[in-house]
View (cartoon, rainbow, N blue to C red):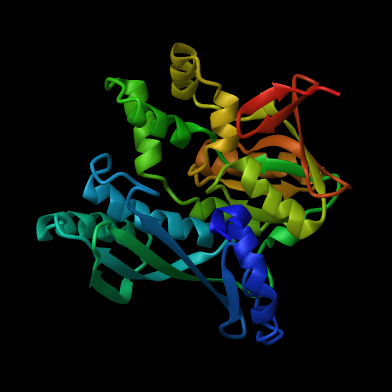
Length: 334
Ligand SMILES: [Mg+2]
């Protein structure tokens, strides 16, 4: 059987229960953005790892080595942010093919260093090896969070509002402009920047951690359509999303209008935005929006609601039901 027949998560489900049986009671293993291990009286340790493979996750001639180094750390710190944690450091393993020279690696490590400095996350160690053809990068990040306070995927409650911390679809839009080799413009540059240099929502996650009404949280790496399903499956809940409420940037809207792309499809299916998606009790939304406005000069965006039911997402556009598939959105047909 080919892996593609069951997918990444089908593969994980085949072995995860056997490993869960090996865990002590106080450890959270496979199944959330980070593993959680007891650290001391007040804090838990967070551990996560993420891999970037050439031609799968990036095209070497389309991203500068400095950006790739920065992004390799950013996508890992995003998983620490998803738990409301504080990042502590990283490990880097890298497999280098012929043609990637020392000057390239120096630039890569400069980007890696710049984000490490920004978030005070030293590189603690790792491994370097050769690769036959592709550049492969694996980062493991560790962090900490107050004991017992993390927002797990499994705690979404019926009636919770589903919110995101920022614009969706920019990264996917940036990828499209790259693949279509679009001429540079301010809008194209903005989207490329969002694709090549995501910023982990560390501070946002920490603030969300302080709100008791925030029940479930994760980061958006694969797109809402896929990521929200993890929350729904873990919480055994359903969801309704109102597409007209998705926050979209002006550059994305303008490029989509000129290219005849669907911003909804990019926002929902594209991924790599590295914003946070979370569920919150409706009565705390206003307070949370006020706090975000004060801290960041931006708001959080309610895009839908958690409901009772089997894990599934119902999509609505201006009150009308639509279906989302690999081919995009279609009007729902009974
Ligand atoms: Mg994640």
